[in-house]
Image (cartoon, rainbow, N blue to C red):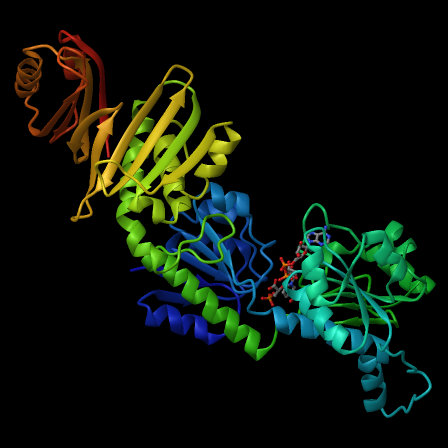
Amino acid sequence: MVKVLISDKMSPKAAEIFRQRGIEVDELTGMSPEELKACIGNYDGLAIRSSTTATAEIIEAATNLKVIGRAGIGVDNVDIPAATAAGICVMNTPFGNAITTAEHAIAMMFSLSRHIPAADASTQAGKWEKSRFMGVELYGKTLGVIGCGNIGSIVADRAIGLKMKVVAFDPFLSPERAADLGVEKVELDDLFARADYITLHTPITDGTRNLINATNIAKMKDGVRIINCARGGLVVEEDLKAALESGKVAGAAVDVYSVEPAKENVLFSLENVVCTPHLGASTTEAQVNVAIQVAEQMADYLLVGSVTNALNMPSVTAEEAPKLKPYMELAKQLGSFAGQVTESGLKKVHVEYEGQAAGLNIKPLTAIILQGLLGPLMDSVNMVNAPIVAKERGIDVMESISDKADDYQTLIRLTVTTEQRSRDIAGTLYGDKRPRIVSIKGINMEAELGPHMLYVTNRDKPGFIGSLGSLLGEAGVNIATFHLGRHEAQGEAIALIEIDSSLAEDTLEKVRALPHVEQVKPLAF
Ligand SMILES: NC(=O)c1ccc[n+]([C@@H]2O[C@H](COP(=O)([O-])OP(=O)(O)OC[C@H]3O[C@@H](n4cnc5c(N)ncnc54)[C@H](O)[C@@H]3O)[C@@H](O)[C@H]2O)c1
Ligand SMILES: O=C(O)[C@H](O)COP(=O)(O)O
Protein backbone atom coordinates (compact mmCIF):
# COMPACT_ATOMS: atom_id res chain seq x y z
CA MET A 1 0.00 0.00 0.00
CA VAL A 2 1.20 3.51 -0.84
CA LYS A 3 2.34 5.36 2.31
CA VAL A 4 2.68 9.07 2.99
CA LEU A 5 4.25 10.86 5.92
CA ILE A 6 2.94 14.27 7.01
CA SER A 7 5.82 15.72 9.02
CA ASP A 8 4.56 19.27 9.67
CA LYS A 9 1.37 20.55 11.24
CA MET A 10 -1.21 20.68 8.50
CA SER A 11 -4.98 20.96 8.19
CA PRO A 12 -6.56 17.52 8.89
CA LYS A 13 -7.99 17.79 5.36
CA ALA A 14 -4.68 16.51 3.96
CA ALA A 15 -4.75 13.23 5.91
CA GLU A 16 -8.47 12.89 5.16
CA ILE A 17 -7.85 13.13 1.41
CA PHE A 18 -4.93 10.67 1.47
CA ARG A 19 -7.08 8.12 3.33
CA GLN A 20 -10.08 8.67 1.03
CA ARG A 21 -7.79 7.88 -1.89
CA GLY A 22 -6.58 4.65 -0.30
CA ILE A 23 -3.21 5.97 0.85
CA GLU A 24 -1.90 5.09 4.31
CA VAL A 25 -0.88 8.22 6.27
CA ASP A 26 1.29 8.79 9.30
CA GLU A 27 1.21 12.21 10.92
CA LEU A 28 4.46 12.58 12.84
CA THR A 29 5.13 16.25 13.46
CA GLY A 30 8.01 17.82 15.36
CA MET A 31 10.52 15.08 14.57
CA SER A 32 14.23 15.78 14.80
CA PRO A 33 16.26 15.36 11.57
CA GLU A 34 17.63 12.08 13.00
CA GLU A 35 14.12 10.76 13.71
CA LEU A 36 12.97 11.75 10.23
CA LYS A 37 16.02 10.09 8.68
CA ALA A 38 15.32 6.89 10.58
CA CYS A 39 11.74 6.54 9.34
CA ILE A 40 11.67 8.21 5.91
CA GLY A 41 12.63 5.00 4.11
CA ASN A 42 9.12 3.65 4.82
CA TYR A 43 7.33 6.26 2.76
CA ASP A 44 6.40 6.93 -0.86
CA GLY A 45 5.43 10.53 -0.17
CA LEU A 46 6.42 13.29 2.24
CA ALA A 47 4.06 16.20 2.89
CA ILE A 48 5.66 19.22 4.57
CA ARG A 49 5.33 22.92 5.38
CA SER A 50 8.35 25.02 6.33
CA SER A 51 9.36 23.26 9.55
CA THR A 52 10.72 20.11 7.93
CA THR A 53 13.98 20.46 6.04
CA ALA A 54 14.41 17.82 3.37
CA THR A 55 18.21 17.80 3.24
CA ALA A 56 20.40 15.70 0.93
CA GLU A 57 20.99 13.39 3.89
CA ILE A 58 17.27 12.83 4.49
CA ILE A 59 16.74 12.32 0.76
CA GLU A 60 19.54 9.74 0.64
CA ALA A 61 17.77 7.79 3.37
CA ALA A 62 14.42 8.09 1.55
CA THR A 63 14.88 4.95 -0.50
CA ASN A 64 11.18 4.61 -1.45
CA LEU A 65 10.29 8.26 -1.71
CA LYS A 66 8.68 9.37 -4.97
CA VAL A 67 7.27 12.78 -4.12
CA ILE A 68 7.78 15.65 -1.69
CA GLY A 69 4.74 17.91 -1.46
CA ARG A 70 5.08 21.38 0.06
CA ALA A 71 1.76 22.64 1.44
CA GLY A 72 2.74 26.21 0.70
CA ILE A 73 4.96 28.18 -1.65
CA GLY A 74 8.61 28.41 -0.57
CA VAL A 75 10.66 25.29 -1.27
CA ASP A 76 13.93 26.60 0.12
CA ASN A 77 13.65 23.89 2.79
CA VAL A 78 13.96 21.16 0.15
CA ASP A 79 17.26 20.23 -1.48
CA ILE A 80 15.79 20.15 -4.98
CA PRO A 81 19.00 19.09 -6.79
CA ALA A 82 19.33 16.14 -4.37
CA ALA A 83 15.65 15.24 -4.83
CA THR A 84 16.00 15.51 -8.61
CA ALA A 85 19.09 13.31 -8.62
CA ALA A 86 17.15 10.75 -6.59
CA GLY A 87 14.19 10.86 -8.98
CA ILE A 88 11.88 12.45 -6.42
CA CYS A 89 9.27 14.84 -7.73
CA VAL A 90 9.06 18.08 -5.71
CA MET A 91 5.77 19.98 -5.88
CA ASN A 92 4.31 22.99 -4.09
CA THR A 93 0.96 24.77 -3.99
CA PRO A 94 1.82 28.11 -5.56
CA PHE A 95 -1.46 29.97 -5.11
CA GLY A 96 -3.21 28.51 -2.04
CA ASN A 97 -1.82 30.95 0.51
CA ALA A 98 -1.01 33.96 -1.69
CA ILE A 99 -4.02 36.12 -0.67
CA THR A 100 -3.50 35.29 2.99
CA THR A 101 0.19 36.21 2.87
CA ALA A 102 -0.51 39.43 1.00
CA GLU A 103 -3.09 40.32 3.64
CA HIS A 104 -0.49 39.66 6.33
CA ALA A 105 1.93 42.05 4.64
CA ILE A 106 -0.78 44.72 4.55
CA ALA A 107 -1.64 44.01 8.20
CA MET A 108 2.04 44.38 9.08
CA MET A 109 2.19 47.69 7.22
CA PHE A 110 -0.74 49.01 9.27
CA SER A 111 0.66 47.60 12.52
CA LEU A 112 3.94 49.32 11.89
CA SER A 113 2.34 52.64 10.92
CA ARG A 114 0.03 52.76 13.94
CA HIS A 115 2.22 50.88 16.50
CA ILE A 116 -0.69 48.54 17.12
CA PRO A 117 1.19 45.71 18.92
CA ALA A 118 3.01 48.06 21.32
CA ALA A 119 -0.08 50.22 21.84
CA ASP A 120 -2.11 47.11 22.63
CA ALA A 121 0.41 45.85 25.18
CA SER A 122 0.66 49.30 26.79
CA THR A 123 -3.09 49.87 26.93
CA GLN A 124 -3.78 46.45 28.42
CA ALA A 125 -1.05 47.13 30.97
CA GLY A 126 -3.17 50.03 32.24
CA LYS A 127 -1.08 52.82 30.74
CA TRP A 128 -2.79 55.39 28.57
CA GLU A 129 0.09 56.47 26.35
CA LYS A 130 -1.83 58.37 23.69
CA SER A 131 1.06 60.64 22.73
CA ARG A 132 3.65 57.83 22.64
CA PHE A 133 1.96 56.09 19.72
CA MET A 134 1.64 58.85 17.13
CA GLY A 135 1.28 57.13 13.77
CA VAL A 136 1.58 57.88 10.04
CA GLU A 137 -0.98 57.56 7.24
CA LEU A 138 -0.61 55.15 4.36
CA TYR A 139 -2.72 57.40 2.11
CA GLY A 140 -0.61 58.99 -0.60
CA LYS A 141 2.58 57.19 0.40
CA THR A 142 4.75 55.27 -2.07
CA LEU A 143 5.00 51.53 -1.60
CA GLY A 144 7.96 49.77 -3.22
CA VAL A 145 7.18 46.15 -4.02
CA ILE A 146 10.27 44.01 -4.58
CA GLY A 147 9.12 40.84 -6.33
CA CYS A 148 5.79 41.36 -8.08
CA GLY A 149 4.64 37.77 -8.57
CA ASN A 150 1.58 36.15 -7.00
CA ILE A 151 1.85 37.72 -3.57
CA GLY A 152 3.56 40.97 -4.56
CA SER A 153 0.86 41.73 -7.12
CA ILE A 154 -1.94 41.12 -4.60
CA VAL A 155 -0.16 43.41 -2.12
CA ALA A 156 0.10 46.03 -4.89
CA ASP A 157 -3.61 45.71 -5.64
CA ARG A 158 -4.59 46.13 -1.98
CA ALA A 159 -2.20 49.06 -1.57
CA ILE A 160 -3.68 50.80 -4.62
CA GLY A 161 -7.06 50.32 -2.91
CA LEU A 162 -5.62 52.19 0.06
CA LYS A 163 -4.68 55.03 -2.32
CA MET A 164 -0.96 54.38 -2.14
CA LYS A 165 1.32 54.87 -5.15
CA VAL A 166 2.96 51.55 -6.00
CA VAL A 167 6.34 51.14 -7.67
CA ALA A 168 7.62 47.65 -8.35
CA PHE A 169 10.97 46.08 -9.07
CA ASP A 170 10.86 42.62 -10.62
CA PRO A 171 13.08 41.64 -13.58
CA PHE A 172 10.32 39.34 -14.85
CA LEU A 173 7.48 41.85 -14.65
CA SER A 174 6.43 42.82 -18.16
CA PRO A 175 5.42 46.43 -18.86
CA GLU A 176 1.96 45.14 -19.90
CA ARG A 177 1.46 43.29 -16.62
CA ALA A 178 2.69 46.32 -14.67
CA ALA A 179 0.16 48.46 -16.52
CA ASP A 180 -2.63 45.94 -15.82
CA LEU A 181 -1.74 45.99 -12.14
CA GLY A 182 -1.58 49.78 -12.06
CA VAL A 183 1.99 49.78 -10.75
CA GLU A 184 5.01 51.65 -12.07
CA LYS A 185 7.82 49.28 -13.05
CA VAL A 186 11.11 50.75 -11.83
CA GLU A 187 14.75 49.81 -11.34
CA LEU A 188 15.81 48.74 -7.88
CA ASP A 189 17.77 51.89 -7.05
CA ASP A 190 14.84 54.02 -8.18
CA LEU A 191 12.56 52.04 -5.86
CA PHE A 192 15.00 52.53 -2.99
CA ALA A 193 15.11 56.27 -3.65
CA ARG A 194 11.33 56.73 -3.86
CA ALA A 195 9.62 54.30 -1.50
CA ASP A 196 8.20 55.27 1.89
CA TYR A 197 7.46 51.59 2.51
CA ILE A 198 9.30 48.63 1.02
CA THR A 199 7.73 45.19 1.01
CA LEU A 200 9.64 42.04 -0.02
CA HIS A 201 8.01 39.26 -2.04
CA THR A 202 10.78 37.40 -3.85
CA PRO A 203 11.93 33.84 -3.31
CA ILE A 204 15.32 33.38 -1.69
CA THR A 205 17.87 32.86 -4.46
CA ASP A 206 21.51 33.77 -5.05
CA GLY A 207 20.19 36.98 -6.62
CA THR A 208 18.01 37.99 -3.66
CA ARG A 209 19.93 36.75 -0.61
CA ASN A 210 21.01 39.69 1.62
CA LEU A 211 19.28 42.18 -0.70
CA ILE A 212 18.45 44.46 2.21
CA ASN A 213 21.97 45.26 3.40
CA ALA A 214 23.79 48.37 4.64
CA THR A 215 24.69 49.49 1.10
CA ASN A 216 21.13 49.28 -0.15
CA ILE A 217 19.65 50.72 3.03
CA ALA A 218 21.87 53.79 2.48
CA LYS A 219 20.12 54.30 -0.88
CA MET A 220 16.68 54.39 0.78
CA LYS A 221 14.72 57.43 1.93
CA ASP A 222 15.30 58.51 5.52
CA GLY A 223 12.46 57.14 7.63
CA VAL A 224 11.60 54.30 5.27
CA ARG A 225 9.62 51.37 6.68
CA ILE A 226 10.41 47.80 5.62
CA ILE A 227 8.11 44.78 5.62
CA ASN A 228 9.41 41.25 5.14
CA CYS A 229 6.86 38.47 4.77
CA ALA A 230 8.95 36.50 2.25
CA ARG A 231 12.16 34.93 3.60
CA GLY A 232 14.51 35.93 6.41
CA GLY A 233 17.62 35.52 4.29
CA LEU A 234 16.61 38.49 2.10
CA VAL A 235 17.68 40.81 4.89
CA VAL A 236 21.03 41.23 6.65
CA GLU A 237 19.47 41.47 10.08
CA GLU A 238 22.47 43.16 11.73
CA ASP A 239 22.44 45.90 9.06
CA LEU A 240 18.71 46.42 9.51
CA LYS A 241 19.16 46.59 13.28
CA ALA A 242 21.82 49.32 12.90
CA ALA A 243 19.56 51.30 10.54
CA LEU A 244 16.61 51.00 12.94
CA GLU A 245 18.78 52.19 15.82
CA SER A 246 20.09 55.16 13.85
CA GLY A 247 16.59 56.11 12.71
CA LYS A 248 17.49 55.74 9.01
CA VAL A 249 14.79 53.07 8.92
CA ALA A 250 11.73 54.20 10.89
CA GLY A 251 10.31 50.75 11.37
CA ALA A 252 10.38 47.15 10.26
CA ALA A 253 7.71 44.47 10.25
CA VAL A 254 9.19 41.01 10.18
CA ASP A 255 7.46 37.66 9.73
CA VAL A 256 10.46 35.59 8.63
CA TYR A 257 13.99 35.23 10.00
CA SER A 258 17.43 34.07 8.98
CA VAL A 259 17.14 31.22 11.48
CA GLU A 260 13.77 29.66 12.27
CA PRO A 261 12.21 28.97 14.64
CA ALA A 262 13.54 32.34 15.78
CA LYS A 263 13.66 31.94 19.53
CA GLU A 264 16.09 34.84 19.59
CA ASN A 265 17.03 37.43 16.97
CA VAL A 266 18.96 40.70 16.83
CA LEU A 267 15.79 42.53 15.80
CA PHE A 268 13.84 41.52 18.89
CA SER A 269 13.13 44.13 21.57
CA LEU A 270 13.71 47.11 19.26
CA GLU A 271 11.08 49.78 19.82
CA ASN A 272 10.17 50.22 16.14
CA VAL A 273 9.93 46.56 15.11
CA VAL A 274 6.80 44.40 14.77
CA CYS A 275 7.41 40.65 14.71
CA THR A 276 5.26 37.62 13.95
CA PRO A 277 6.41 33.98 13.97
CA HIS A 278 6.20 33.12 10.23
CA LEU A 279 2.43 33.61 10.24
CA GLY A 280 2.13 34.80 6.65
CA ALA A 281 0.25 31.72 5.49
CA SER A 282 -1.51 31.01 8.76
CA THR A 283 -5.19 31.50 8.14
CA THR A 284 -7.85 28.82 8.25
CA GLU A 285 -8.66 29.40 4.62
CA ALA A 286 -5.08 29.24 3.34
CA GLN A 287 -4.24 26.17 5.38
CA VAL A 288 -7.29 24.30 4.13
CA ASN A 289 -6.45 25.38 0.56
CA VAL A 290 -2.84 24.21 0.66
CA ALA A 291 -3.61 20.99 2.55
CA ILE A 292 -6.30 19.94 0.06
CA GLN A 293 -4.14 20.94 -2.88
CA VAL A 294 -0.98 19.20 -1.73
CA ALA A 295 -2.80 15.98 -0.82
CA GLU A 296 -4.67 15.86 -4.13
CA GLN A 297 -1.50 16.58 -6.12
CA MET A 298 0.56 13.99 -4.26
CA ALA A 299 -2.20 11.34 -4.47
CA ASP A 300 -2.59 12.03 -8.21
CA TYR A 301 1.13 11.61 -8.71
CA LEU A 302 1.42 8.45 -6.64
CA LEU A 303 -1.75 6.77 -7.92
CA VAL A 304 -2.35 8.12 -11.43
CA GLY A 305 1.00 9.51 -12.50
CA SER A 306 -0.28 13.03 -13.14
CA VAL A 307 2.07 15.86 -12.26
CA THR A 308 0.86 19.29 -11.09
CA ASN A 309 2.97 22.20 -9.82
CA ALA A 310 6.18 20.20 -9.88
CA LEU A 311 9.40 22.17 -9.68
CA ASN A 312 11.59 19.50 -11.19
CA MET A 313 9.56 17.70 -13.85
CA PRO A 314 7.09 18.44 -16.65
CA SER A 315 3.38 18.66 -15.84
CA VAL A 316 0.99 15.84 -16.74
CA THR A 317 -2.73 16.41 -16.16
CA ALA A 318 -4.99 13.73 -14.66
CA GLU A 319 -6.71 13.55 -18.06
CA GLU A 320 -3.40 13.04 -19.90
CA ALA A 321 -1.94 10.48 -17.49
CA PRO A 322 -3.96 7.40 -18.64
CA LYS A 323 -3.43 8.34 -22.32
CA LEU A 324 0.31 8.72 -21.76
CA LYS A 325 0.71 5.47 -19.83
CA PRO A 326 1.14 3.08 -22.80
CA TYR A 327 3.28 5.69 -24.58
CA MET A 328 5.48 5.90 -21.48
CA GLU A 329 6.11 2.18 -21.83
CA LEU A 330 6.88 2.56 -25.54
CA ALA A 331 9.16 5.54 -24.84
CA LYS A 332 10.98 3.59 -22.15
CA GLN A 333 11.54 0.66 -24.49
CA LEU A 334 12.81 2.85 -27.34
CA GLY A 335 15.20 4.73 -25.06
CA SER A 336 16.41 1.61 -23.33
CA PHE A 337 16.94 -0.23 -26.64
CA ALA A 338 19.00 2.64 -28.04
CA GLY A 339 20.92 3.02 -24.78
CA GLN A 340 21.84 -0.64 -24.68
CA VAL A 341 23.18 -0.73 -28.23
CA THR A 342 25.00 2.60 -27.98
CA GLU A 343 28.67 2.08 -27.30
CA SER A 344 30.33 5.44 -27.88
CA GLY A 345 29.80 9.04 -26.74
CA LEU A 346 26.30 10.38 -27.31
CA LYS A 347 26.13 13.68 -29.12
CA LYS A 348 22.58 14.17 -30.27
CA VAL A 349 19.12 12.76 -29.59
CA HIS A 350 16.19 13.50 -31.88
CA VAL A 351 12.72 12.32 -30.95
CA GLU A 352 10.02 12.55 -33.59
CA TYR A 353 6.39 12.23 -32.56
CA GLU A 354 4.18 11.38 -35.51
CA GLY A 355 0.42 10.94 -36.04
CA GLN A 356 -1.57 10.63 -32.79
CA ALA A 357 1.61 10.81 -30.73
CA ALA A 358 2.12 14.35 -32.02
CA GLY A 359 -0.98 15.45 -30.11
CA LEU A 360 0.34 14.26 -26.75
CA ASN A 361 2.16 16.08 -23.97
CA ILE A 362 5.59 15.04 -25.25
CA LYS A 363 7.82 16.47 -22.47
CA PRO A 364 7.39 13.53 -20.07
CA LEU A 365 7.78 11.10 -23.00
CA THR A 366 11.08 12.64 -24.01
CA ALA A 367 12.16 12.58 -20.35
CA ILE A 368 11.46 8.87 -20.13
CA ILE A 369 13.22 8.19 -23.46
CA LEU A 370 16.27 9.98 -22.05
CA GLN A 371 16.04 7.94 -18.85
CA GLY A 372 15.96 4.72 -20.87
CA LEU A 373 18.75 5.92 -23.13
CA LEU A 374 21.11 7.19 -20.43
CA GLY A 375 20.29 4.49 -17.86
CA PRO A 376 22.59 1.81 -19.36
CA LEU A 377 25.36 4.39 -19.76
CA MET A 378 25.42 6.03 -16.35
CA ASP A 379 24.28 5.49 -12.78
CA SER A 380 21.36 7.14 -11.02
CA VAL A 381 19.51 8.52 -13.97
CA ASN A 382 15.75 8.78 -13.71
CA MET A 383 12.86 10.45 -15.45
CA VAL A 384 13.16 13.50 -13.20
CA ASN A 385 16.85 14.18 -13.70
CA ALA A 386 17.38 12.71 -17.20
CA PRO A 387 16.83 15.99 -19.13
CA ILE A 388 19.26 17.79 -16.79
CA VAL A 389 21.83 14.97 -17.00
CA ALA A 390 21.62 15.08 -20.82
CA LYS A 391 22.14 18.84 -20.81
CA GLU A 392 25.07 18.61 -18.39
CA ARG A 393 26.69 16.02 -20.65
CA GLY A 394 26.34 18.34 -23.64
CA ILE A 395 23.88 16.03 -25.41
CA ASP A 396 21.75 17.98 -27.83
CA VAL A 397 18.10 16.91 -27.41
CA MET A 398 15.65 17.76 -30.18
CA GLU A 399 11.94 17.06 -30.38
CA SER A 400 9.71 17.38 -33.41
CA ILE A 401 6.09 16.63 -34.13
CA SER A 402 4.26 15.83 -37.33
CA ASP A 403 0.59 15.01 -37.92
CA LYS A 404 1.54 12.33 -40.45
CA ALA A 405 2.97 8.93 -39.44
CA ASP A 406 3.34 7.16 -42.84
CA ASP A 407 1.96 3.63 -42.40
CA TYR A 408 1.04 4.05 -38.75
CA GLN A 409 -1.62 5.99 -36.88
CA THR A 410 0.88 6.82 -34.20
CA LEU A 411 4.65 6.57 -34.10
CA ILE A 412 7.64 7.60 -32.01
CA ARG A 413 11.00 7.60 -33.75
CA LEU A 414 14.22 8.01 -31.81
CA THR A 415 17.44 8.89 -33.62
CA VAL A 416 20.61 8.76 -31.61
CA THR A 417 23.82 10.25 -32.97
CA THR A 418 27.10 9.19 -31.40
CA GLU A 419 30.68 10.11 -32.22
CA GLN A 420 30.64 7.23 -34.72
CA ARG A 421 27.18 6.95 -36.25
CA SER A 422 23.45 7.69 -36.24
CA ARG A 423 20.96 4.98 -35.35
CA ASP A 424 17.20 5.15 -35.35
CA ILE A 425 14.48 3.05 -33.86
CA ALA A 426 10.74 3.55 -34.11
CA GLY A 427 7.76 2.09 -32.33
CA THR A 428 4.01 2.24 -32.37
CA LEU A 429 0.94 1.23 -30.38
CA TYR A 430 -1.94 -0.71 -31.86
CA GLY A 431 -5.45 -1.07 -30.43
CA ASP A 432 -4.18 -3.37 -27.66
CA LYS A 433 -1.89 -0.52 -26.46
CA ARG A 434 1.11 -2.85 -26.31
CA PRO A 435 4.31 -1.28 -27.66
CA ARG A 436 5.71 -2.67 -30.92
CA ILE A 437 9.10 -1.90 -32.42
CA VAL A 438 8.43 -1.30 -36.12
CA SER A 439 11.77 -0.17 -37.45
CA ILE A 440 15.42 -0.38 -36.49
CA LYS A 441 18.03 1.47 -38.54
CA GLY A 442 15.41 1.97 -41.21
CA ILE A 443 14.76 -1.80 -41.45
CA ASN A 444 11.08 -2.61 -41.00
CA MET A 445 10.03 -5.34 -38.60
CA GLU A 446 7.35 -5.83 -36.01
CA ALA A 447 8.49 -6.95 -32.60
CA GLU A 448 7.30 -6.93 -29.03
CA LEU A 449 10.14 -6.70 -26.56
CA GLY A 450 10.37 -9.24 -23.74
CA PRO A 451 12.56 -9.35 -20.62
CA HIS A 452 15.45 -11.09 -22.45
CA MET A 453 16.21 -10.20 -26.05
CA LEU A 454 19.07 -10.89 -28.39
CA TYR A 455 19.83 -8.29 -31.04
CA VAL A 456 21.93 -9.49 -33.95
CA THR A 457 22.97 -7.59 -37.06
CA ASN A 458 24.31 -9.65 -39.94
CA ARG A 459 24.63 -9.97 -43.70
CA ASP A 460 21.54 -11.57 -45.18
CA LYS A 461 22.89 -15.00 -46.31
CA PRO A 462 21.26 -18.43 -46.58
CA GLY A 463 21.73 -20.68 -43.56
CA PHE A 464 22.18 -17.97 -40.96
CA ILE A 465 18.80 -18.37 -39.26
CA GLY A 466 19.19 -22.16 -39.07
CA SER A 467 22.66 -22.03 -37.58
CA LEU A 468 21.61 -19.40 -34.99
CA GLY A 469 18.54 -21.46 -34.02
CA SER A 470 20.61 -24.64 -33.68
CA LEU A 471 23.26 -22.88 -31.61
CA LEU A 472 20.68 -21.52 -29.15
CA GLY A 473 18.95 -24.92 -29.02
CA GLU A 474 22.24 -26.67 -28.22
CA ALA A 475 22.85 -24.14 -25.43
CA GLY A 476 19.41 -25.05 -23.99
CA VAL A 477 18.02 -21.56 -24.69
CA ASN A 478 14.36 -21.51 -25.64
CA ILE A 479 13.32 -19.04 -28.34
CA ALA A 480 10.03 -17.29 -27.59
CA THR A 481 9.78 -15.08 -30.71
CA PHE A 482 12.02 -14.47 -33.71
CA HIS A 483 11.78 -11.29 -35.76
CA LEU A 484 13.72 -10.61 -38.92
CA GLY A 485 14.18 -7.69 -41.20
CA ARG A 486 16.57 -6.61 -43.95
CA HIS A 487 17.27 -3.73 -46.27
CA GLU A 488 17.48 -5.92 -49.38
CA ALA A 489 18.39 -9.53 -50.30
CA GLN A 490 22.01 -10.24 -49.29
CA GLY A 491 22.16 -6.80 -47.62
CA GLU A 492 22.22 -5.64 -44.01
CA ALA A 493 19.79 -7.66 -41.85
CA ILE A 494 18.59 -7.65 -38.26
CA ALA A 495 17.36 -10.45 -36.02
CA LEU A 496 15.55 -9.57 -32.82
CA ILE A 497 14.97 -12.70 -30.79
CA GLU A 498 13.11 -13.07 -27.54
CA ILE A 499 14.60 -15.81 -25.41
CA ASP A 500 13.29 -17.31 -22.19
CA SER A 501 16.50 -16.82 -20.22
CA SER A 502 19.62 -14.70 -20.44
CA LEU A 503 22.57 -15.96 -22.49
CA ALA A 504 25.82 -17.22 -20.98
CA GLU A 505 28.95 -15.39 -22.17
CA ASP A 506 30.32 -18.45 -24.00
CA THR A 507 27.06 -18.81 -25.96
CA LEU A 508 27.23 -15.16 -26.88
CA GLU A 509 30.78 -15.67 -28.14
CA LYS A 510 29.59 -18.57 -30.30
CA VAL A 511 26.83 -16.37 -31.77
CA ARG A 512 29.41 -13.68 -32.50
CA ALA A 513 31.56 -16.29 -34.26
CA LEU A 514 28.76 -17.36 -36.66
CA PRO A 515 29.46 -16.49 -40.30
CA HIS A 516 28.12 -13.10 -41.49
CA VAL A 517 27.39 -11.80 -37.96
CA GLU A 518 28.36 -8.16 -37.43
CA GLN A 519 27.04 -7.26 -33.99
CA VAL A 520 25.48 -9.24 -31.14
CA LYS A 521 23.90 -7.59 -28.11
CA PRO A 522 21.92 -9.20 -25.32
CA LEU A 523 19.23 -6.74 -24.25
CA ALA A 524 17.18 -6.68 -21.06
CA PHE A 525 13.83 -4.89 -20.62
N1 LIG B 1 5.61 34.49 5.21
C1 LIG B 1 4.99 33.46 4.71
O1 LIG B 1 4.38 32.69 5.42
C2 LIG B 1 5.03 33.23 3.23
C3 LIG B 1 3.92 32.66 2.60
C4 LIG B 1 3.98 32.41 1.24
C5 LIG B 1 5.11 32.72 0.52
N2 LIG B 1 6.16 33.27 1.17
C6 LIG B 1 7.38 33.64 0.42
O2 LIG B 1 7.00 34.60 -0.55
C7 LIG B 1 7.76 34.40 -1.72
C8 LIG B 1 7.01 34.93 -2.91
O3 LIG B 1 5.88 34.14 -3.16
P1 LIG B 1 5.05 34.29 -4.53
O4 LIG B 1 3.96 33.30 -4.47
O5 LIG B 1 4.68 35.69 -4.77
O6 LIG B 1 6.13 33.83 -5.57
P2 LIG B 1 6.15 34.16 -7.11
O7 LIG B 1 7.10 33.21 -7.72
O8 LIG B 1 4.78 34.25 -7.66
O9 LIG B 1 6.78 35.62 -7.16
C9 LIG B 1 8.10 35.89 -6.88
C10 LIG B 1 8.52 37.03 -7.77
O10 LIG B 1 9.84 37.41 -7.43
C11 LIG B 1 10.46 37.83 -8.61
N3 LIG B 1 11.91 37.86 -8.45
C12 LIG B 1 12.79 36.86 -8.55
N4 LIG B 1 14.05 37.31 -8.35
C13 LIG B 1 13.92 38.64 -8.13
C14 LIG B 1 14.88 39.67 -7.85
N5 LIG B 1 16.17 39.42 -7.78
N6 LIG B 1 14.40 40.91 -7.66
C15 LIG B 1 13.09 41.18 -7.74
N7 LIG B 1 12.15 40.25 -8.01
C16 LIG B 1 12.57 38.99 -8.19
C17 LIG B 1 10.01 36.83 -9.63
O11 LIG B 1 10.13 37.32 -10.93
C18 LIG B 1 8.55 36.64 -9.24
O12 LIG B 1 7.70 37.49 -9.98
C19 LIG B 1 7.94 32.88 -1.76
O13 LIG B 1 9.10 32.54 -2.41
C20 LIG B 1 8.00 32.48 -0.32
O14 LIG B 1 9.33 32.36 0.06
C21 LIG B 1 6.16 33.53 2.50
O1 LIG C 1 6.34 29.60 1.59
C1 LIG C 1 5.28 29.52 2.21
O2 LIG C 1 4.25 29.02 1.72
C2 LIG C 1 5.21 30.14 3.55
O3 LIG C 1 6.46 30.47 4.02
C3 LIG C 1 4.37 29.43 4.53
O4 LIG C 1 5.08 28.58 5.35
P1 LIG C 1 4.33 27.64 6.39
O5 LIG C 1 3.56 26.63 5.62
O6 LIG C 1 5.36 27.01 7.22
O7 LIG C 1 3.42 28.51 7.19
